[in-house]
Image 1 (cartoon, rainbow over the protein chains, first blue to last red):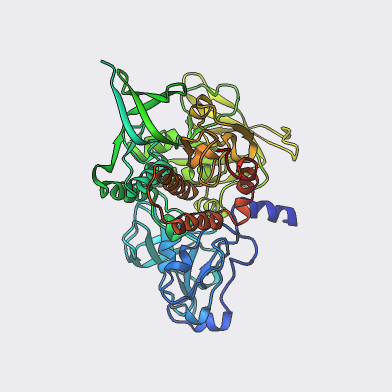
Image 2: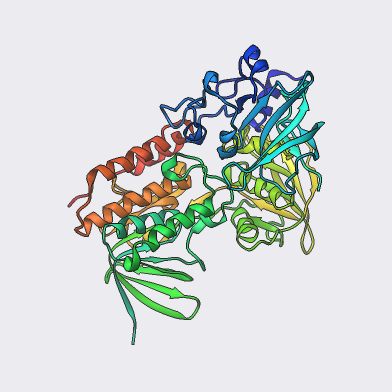
Length: 171
Length: 366
């Protein structure tokens, strides 16, 4: 079984193993009822970077007092617009909408690879270490900032929303 | 007849720091000449296809090569105040006469005389020794970026990346974008040295990052056919079983060291500062070295992020313009320093702060 040190080593190699400041989840009850979803950011290290906050049109990513702050979220302001998903240079922002159906959710994630999937495509859904954990159906593809970061919306099994953080499109 | 080019301000190096320095000084009315050894200006910016970190002021969220375009547009808008000479290398400085020598291509030599100079020569890549590290297929990460992102050529099919600093992590991502398989990233330290989010974004694409591992040998006869890696303990001693990984490219991203020959030639006071990754010149808060006519900016002053290099370039350009008698708004200088301090404020800036305090002079004897 994994001991504390394995977990530390995994985290030190870039895999989120625990919720922590800069990488927290929305309050569950509100999240389940929130149309269009809430932002989920996984940015637990203090680094000099703030585009998530400066690009947020509603102030839901709370403006930083120090550029090295990790992001904090005011969920009452988050519309799930996914502008931060497109803007974040670390590709660390996601939007997860739990209202899609009883057993399916939608994740909006950043994508900068080829091929670019199209609406209706089936893609492989990957966890934080690149393992395929399910398939998903692409429900929307957009390029919000017209800067070659694509935001892909994928319909995924609801029980995998805490695992899936990337997709692999089949060309 | 020997040609001597005369200019008010000479900026050596047309990368992130040099372009910002030139834009700042020329914006204040200084006749500026930028010398760039590459075929095009932009330095490392032109190879950076990822979005930059930092704040809006340093173009955060914008891809590096776009930032290069933005800076070149700013310079273009200054008309004939800035001349950029590409494919030209400053080969030496002769302090007795205050003359620089430059070489365009391989056959045109000339001399440059400048009232003031900003040296923004950037950095060079380090390598680590291991058997067969001279085989074709062992690349520096900068070369891989140049091949892929400037010329559109992939370096091979399967890469072992050595080093998990920001460069190793970013280039691994860019290789994946180019359709090249990254077999593993090997890192001697017990944690990634680059930003955690850069590591996360390649981990979720299935690239393993092997912490506390080193490369011990490159395999192959004429070209690379594999790499041997081995686990390290906390004292960096090789322990455990060596493991062979098939690959045709070994990419070295094990750090940079400042390019400082011209400072030595100019007699600038220098110090070896491990936190800044090599010998660097002492400087005051205007980025002026102990030589009153020479300023420094960017990686040549110590290895740091491009965002900081750009602000340092602004500070050096501002200060050189002021020294040339231009009327400068002091609030702008204070604003630049505030930005630098913000960029260096956090934990990742701790090392930089610890390095800079060793070479920051309160001021030079008049």
